[in-house]
Amino acid sequence: MIKNRLPSLLRHFPEGIPVASTRSYFVHQNDRKSGYRKKKDENIIKNVRDGLKQLKHEVKAWKEEVKERITHDPFEFINPGHVEPLWLFEEDDCLPSWKVSTDTDWGLGFSSASLERSNLGYAAFTGNLDTTVPKDGKTSRAGYCSMQSAEPRKSFQREDYYDWSLYTHLIMRVRGDGRTYRVNLASVGYFDVTWHDQWNYLLFTRGGPYWQIAKIPFSKFLLTAKGRIQDHQGPVPLDRISSLAIVCADKVSGPFRLEIDYIALQYDPSHTEKFAYEMYKVPDFTD
Amino acid sequence: MIKWLCLFFSYVLMVSSHSWLGLWLSMEMNSLSFVPIMIEESKESSLKYFLIQSVASVIFLASILSQSFSFLTPFALLIKIGAAPFHVWLISISKSVSWKVLAFLMTFQKIGPLLGLAMIQFTSSFFILISAVIGGLGGVNQSNIRLIMAFSSVSHLSWLMVNMTSFFLVSAYYVAYVVILLSVIALLSQSGLLSLAQMSDGTSLIYSASVMFGLLSLAGLPPFLGFFIKWMSLEMNLLSPTLILTLVLSSCLSVYFYFKIAVTSLLFPSEGGAQGAETLAILSMGFNVLLPLSAL
Image (tube, rainbow over all chains, first blue to last red; front, side, top):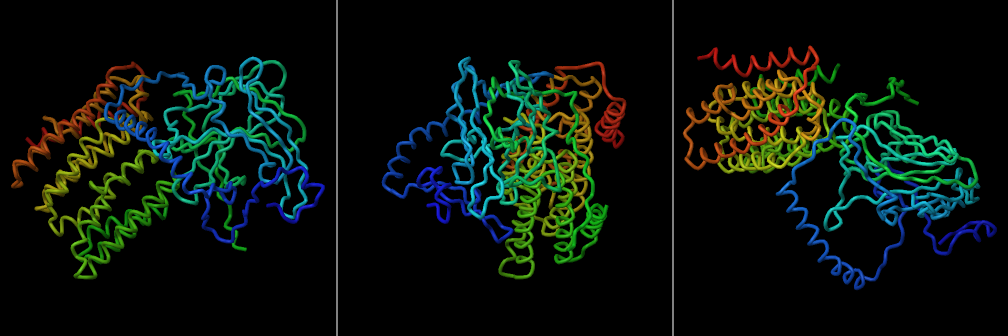
């Protein structure tokens, strides 16, 4: 439960939201979620019953995987310029698989967001960004809203990755409101040093009634970890992408709206750049 | 620069070491020099490599220092080399690293463990069979070129292990394998293609032909260099019929996935091509075709 907060600020928070214990005194990270975990259901019998219900579906999925691995349907040739759709929001019903979160969920701010279908059938990521900092003595900055794709899973809920190594660009057809959004590619690895690695790209939207097609080369993504730009940069590990997220956190309070038609990948062999940013050797700071 | 110097010095130490401890020391130096080279490309892969090599080094050190654990020596060396059934780390790493690092992993990084295995003349039929079978079957349903080459490396390890009875035979096979593999990897890295699905972009005929020759040489088809080293392995070693049959059949499986790459590159020819790539292609063809014919 929330403790040590002023009553005037407490009334904005829903009851029972967990408080993330994000402080860590060690280099080693022992929690992949860094404390941002929801309380698990402790009812063992219910968990076992739910697990058994899922078992049949998971075994079926596993059989399909083995069959696919053995038969390996003939692959398609990817021609130069080939566009591979990932999420077609107008046609597919993929909205429920996206997770929307804001700083309000963790008691770290007052923003709100939702991801719904617009009148014309596109995905509309809308909400209100609030940069008011809650006076809890811990938070110094506030205001973010994000929509994140579901992490791919194999049978028995094993972790899987998107393999985008054949492609060079991320294509998004969006209609924004003139704000700057951040496109995040997460690549959660086995080891704790890579758990929080994200590659970010700033998507500048035009606003107005016209759509824009953003063709973002993967070489232009910048490595960050827990929101901090890293000194040692490198290209995106395209064979191990866990999720894609679009974040509104441009420090400007007010409503936002981003409509998305589709998100796709493109193979452009003329784009040979591996990484766009020059790496200067920084001096060793011994102090 | 220092890491490259340390790496090359470790190879020199490996071949000149006269004791197990010297070999262990040089292998440690080798892996510690190689990790910074890998870390530039992929943190994940370099960490996996470091952990696997460290565990294998610990087992190796324990086995050489203590008589009770001496039976673990070949296991430690097989883990280091990436032979089946300890090959999973090699396959996992191959996908994420560049061709340059993969070339090192599949060739020069094997010097130390191979020397160790040659010292104890390790010729276990079980490991030869399992490497041949897994190397052959694993590459069959792959479309990622780097994974195909990694499985081919596992398959060739079985042939290397067959020759462990004689230091000359294993050295001859290894040198020929390195020459063929480096020529093939040099060509594949020039194209920048990662998967068979991308090969529709088109490559020049001479490039495709030299890739094909290199791959057929790796497959062990005459009159290429690869055929002669495999023939030498079968002729000069006393092998059971089961082993010979398994090795030959696994080579047939390897031919299938090598042909997949070669034929796919030939399906989409184009007239263009970089001058440098054509020179490399001609050199590669020279190694694979003319070198064995000159010996005849």
